[in-house]
Length: 286
Length: 164
Image (cartoon, rainbow over all chains, first blue to last red; front, side, top):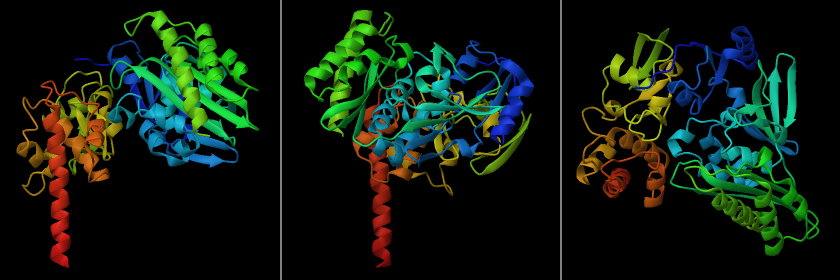
């Protein structure tokens, strides 16, 4: 039987209240939402926070809406809600592709978008998705809100830009005409973490790629992206050859490690092939 | 801390430690042992219950998080002494062998049919993809859920006919 160590439990009834509780309990307090990363770690005693601050009641963090030229996704949006949101998936089918293969449907009922990003697992899917989309993370602290480009959000495995006393409240995704997106993942079985996965976002203007976003996860890509491969694509007409070369470049610049999910050279092969496939599918959706 | 959780429509107030998991609250505090406790790692899904209608794995939810919320367990599926259609389906189609995964499967099936009254095999398989049957009796589980969907549709159809 796995039992977490003792902790204090508090429910936040607003974002300011959550911040006040974070300040009161100090650096050993943790925010809990879906809890599907944190509670298993607490049960294994890999995490022993002194206090949990439950933000499940903060409905204001659970919304998905288009605001101006951005899609705003609240940190408390559950995976299931993102998967079912046609507002999000019509604009960015990459969300549907990715959410269908994140954990399993019951875990997705509970786990949240913000929790996934804040966990900072180097194999996490949405980190690659938001990186491909060049989203911005809105972080709130006692002094107000600040916005961090998602590619500066992850400082390393399990480390993020969210500082002590701060809370991730929202993700903002730029909406651009002429854009297609897709996600490709190889997993050992349903619900597993990826062996490797790639997301692609392609914006075409006047017959050439105006902007490309490539997100990679589980293959040691810094900030979950592949900037060298993106640069290769920009200014070129979309097509099989350019996409294959972008895949090759992405694979060259990532740094996969061998583990129980496969050897490094296999993961590198996947990085190239999944990048290519995601680009082809993304371009087909424009 | 003192919490009040509505389980199968009945409020239960208990003094619990914040670290108590919902699955143990249901089984050990309330004696509702229909909810099973399996892998303890949110993989197997035998502990699935509905929290405000949504199927969740109760080994990965704290009891205190359910304070003020509605939980439905397998004990709450029966209505006025009559089994739910999904329970009847599992009886009719031999949907269980050892029975360990059955309560979780039943709750997921009920939640699926509430949302999608006439699911195809693919939708059923996807809905139960977070739950393991250690007897590997998936074929009959899928058949049982199809049976329940069909039975409910037949009932709805005859009710409409009776009216007209």
